[in-house]
Length: 459
Image (cartoon, rainbow, N blue to C red):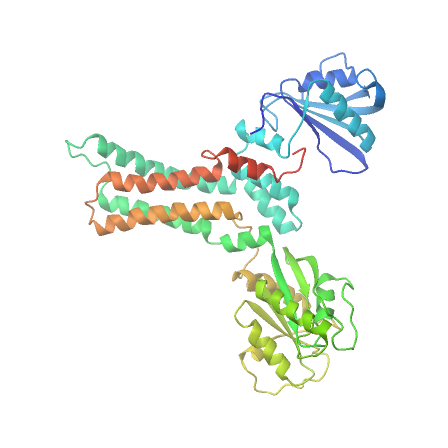
């Protein structure tokens, strides 16, 4: 892992030019380095923005720059990292920021690694691992729903849920261990019926946290949605309408789209990869054949298929083949061109009755389609509240912890209450270990490196 004894420095604002650029320092020498950079004679007042003039001439003669800056100090332990932290707000010129970085390094600081500021916050007890991961998720959020879910975890919603479960498990472990301490006296600090009820309560808490896990992962990671259909049913027009941009070429010529076209879109708070595909039909055109094969390939790996049918013409063999190929996976069937007279019979198969009627040309039904995509992906009907757990690592550990408690509960039933406490304790301790892996109280250096390497530098 990174050395925590060094004073680290990094640009905390995005690359490029801007009105402001922020240099962040953390470590025992952070204030000394900032003082040397600015030549400030009086001590900086904690948490008060202080105007200073910066000159790197005495530090770096070859690339000396000057600037007017604002310096703010955050003494340990009441800072983001738990160490002395200094933030220098300069003008957002890459030349100026690079000169400040070089000068800070010349004064003894070290360039920070990705995520090292947040790693120090974790190591110094300012954040647990759940909250540290939420920082990265909040920075990377591209939809308001992603940002809200990440902020809830940063505020401690998942940490609080873990704390409640741990409290129940710790109580059971303590009482079972106390029973083991007095084997000859025959003392039991928890009776079988009470133990069974307590285990049931813990399992219920796990179920509550995991209830929306699928929806949580969908919010955090997004999904792939493939639009399929026969030629000229309006796939590309629907693709453009959902993107609110003329991204795909639309003509009356069948087979206009010959390759996959993918764009990212925020639909209903979800970050979706929308894929427009070639019209699925039998053809002898080699290029179109390749496009149809790619369409089938995209369909096979997508999380949701939107099957587009043309309501203004009778259902054909090509439509039926598309419906059959999309049937094994979650899908929405869309009956397009409702602004034209319908050519469909009055009696329809289930997919026809369930089809969402839209007109891409007039926009009718498109809002309802957007609302249905989220529930079709997750099976959830409500999207008002952000889920507690969104991270696959967390989900896996929660499921492992719940499985351990369920094993203890089943063993208790099987033994009719005669199972020695040691066996129950082994399962309950495994559950506690899994929960502590979530928060980082039990974590390897390899895991921490893997998590923090995905952070941006400066955070």
